[in-house]
Image 1: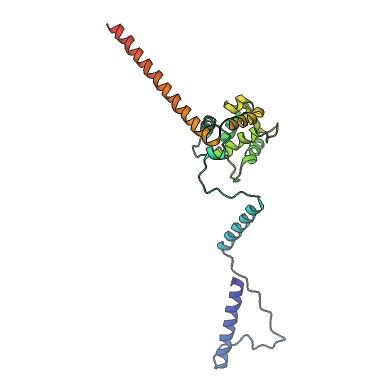
Image 2: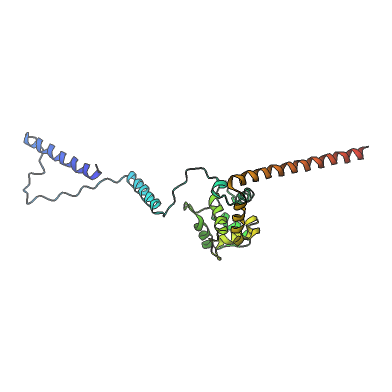
Length: 240
């Protein structure tokens, strides 16, 4: 039942109670005592507005936008870059994560407008205020005006897929970044990733890269051990 219907019913009940009191000889005057022709029209009853109505309206509006594809639904699952960006190697993802954290000066997990401005200046491709806003808008899925790590990875995903315009600030960011994508060339990155994907399946690729990292750490440990042993021998020689 709406608020307006409830207000009308309460008003009607009050009129009936007033009529009953008048029939019983009560002192109160009934509003119906005046002739029908002279009766003034009753003002319309306004339904009370509440914050709940505006909140419900906002939720319904967002649901409609999501249904029409205007807005993306908020992701409730934990973001996993290895599964959502399987075309990127583990080393590349770590390099991108390191770059993201370097420019996330606020340590809040986002790159805002000022942090993006500093990034582009350090990369040698400064942008105007409108240019920076346009860069964020191009990959800003949740319309919060800043870049999450996932949206940051989307820049390089779009660059590798050839989905960025030549005059895009995002393309300049991808080209000037000192990571594998830039070394391969943004236009050639798509072929690079496709060739790598064909060489290894998703499961075996992950295992192979993990094993390679473990072997690399072993080699580093062995090199460090040999250097320490050589240093001890040299020190013993001098001591003798």
